[in-house]
Every structure is written in structure tokens, then in C-alpha cells.
Length: 340
Image 1 (cartoon, helix red, strand yellow):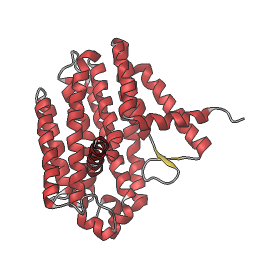
Image 2: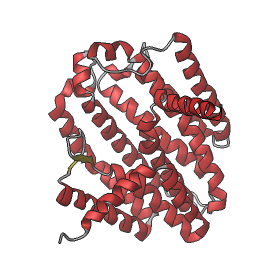
Image 3: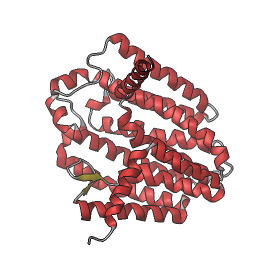
Image 4: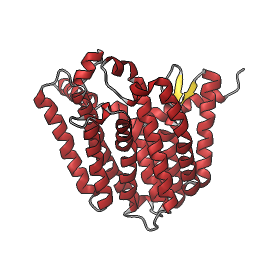
């Protein structure tokens, strides 16, 4: 009886993870936004005891909107995926199941909105986060099919809006306002990273989208055109990141960026990995991705710990909640040892 109940619970949890595509956003997106929260907190003089309840609010906000995006995208992509011969998690689901799943995300999102209410600006951007992704996926707008508007909508919904509603929410509680230059750098960095992220996603889906006649920007420009666009935008992303680290992270920022660079060097020299800006090839690594989900949040945890040593408890918690990124980086760092 107990084993049967455990199996049902495991099956229910696996089903929830599958339909929400949690594996594609939990470790790939959430750590970066928590890093942004720690950045704003440390720049604004907030201590860890003041910060940690707000980190829970950030999680409560990210999870339902990320699940909503994933479910809505599968629901609205059914016909295109069928033409491309691509699997779709919602294809065999009943209309009632789809509506219930989307409504459940919306209810959780409204609860998160209530928690974000102390910052009207954060709440407004959070609402826009939901709206822009609805326009990206659903008719009659369906910006996904409209080239550049689709790229900008996904970049806004996937990176810019979450970065800024997180930042403005935490900023509501800090003692010292952030420098305008930090806000500018945050904007340049987030839009550049968001565009590079969706371009990579579109190139991974390039063949399927061409077959289904989905006119994404990648289909319109071709692989080489997208690569040229990414190369032209990457300097903005890098400058934004370096300015952020210089203004808010001090020597911790330089140290952890150098460690990431060493890990990247090890992957290339010892394992033969190529580093790419967009479009994976095997074996290859998306430049700075592991940095953003591992070293970026760790940088600001360590900055926070300079004022509140208790913040170091976030390190094992981060390892527990997001184990894959650290595991892969430390595996590659072992290859820095000289060959015998």
C-alpha cells in the first residue's frame, strides 16, 4: 500500500515536471534571477536576514510564469509540431486538461502578484511578463511567426522582464538606491542575453520550423545570418556584464569570472569542446551559460556574505536546488590538472 502510494506520488510529480517542461527552465533560468536579486540586495546594503524571505517571493513568481509559458507554447504549437513530426507533450491531452493546467498556472501567478504588490513597478512588469508571452504564442498575435517581433517578445519575456521585476521588487526594500549606471548595465545585459538565448533556441528548432513553415527569424535569416546577428550583439552583453561586475561585485566578480574562464579553457583544450555564441554543435558549449547559472549567483552570495556571513548558507542550498551546473563545471575543472 505504501509503495503504491509512493509510486503514484512519483508519477504525479514526474507528470507535472514533464508538462511544465521544468527541466528546460529550472536550472537554466531561475539561478540567474536569484543572482539578480542578490546583486540588488548587496548593492543596496540589504543583509541576508532581510533578503531571504524575498528570495522565496522571487521563486513563487518565476515558477508559475515559466510553467505557463511552457504549457501554452506546447498547446499552441500542436499543429506545427505535427507537421514537423516533432513530439508535443500536450498533443494527446484533452481540452479540459489543457484549460485546467493553464488556469492553475494563472491562479498561482495571481498569488505571486499579491506577494509582489509592495512594489507596483515590479507588479506591473510581472503582469507584462505574462502578457508578452501570451502574445508570443497565442493567436491572433502569435509573434513567434513574425520574425523580429517574436525574438524581441521572447527576449523580453524570458530575460528582460524577469530580470527587472526581480530587481525592482528587491529594490523596494533596500536602504541605498542603486546607481542609474547599474540599471542601464542591467538593461543592456538582459536584452542582449535574451536575444542570444532565443536565437539559439530557434536554431535548434530550425529544421522543424522550416518543415512546418513557421517563419521565425532564424528561418527568415538562415543559420549564417543569425550567427552574424549574435556576433554583432554579443559585445553589448559582455560590456553590460563587465560593468555590472565592476560596479557591484568588486574582486569577487573578477575572481569567479576567471575561474569560469579556466573551466572553459579546460573543456576546450582537454575535452575538445567548442565555444559557441548560438547554435549548439557537438561537442560545444554556449558561451557564459554555465557562468550565469553557477558563478553569477555565487558571486553575489559571496558579496552578501561580506556583510552577513549567514548568507553562506545559500551556497549549499544552491547546490541542492541547482546541482547540475556546479557538477558539470567542477568535473571540467579537474581537467586543468597536468597530464602525466
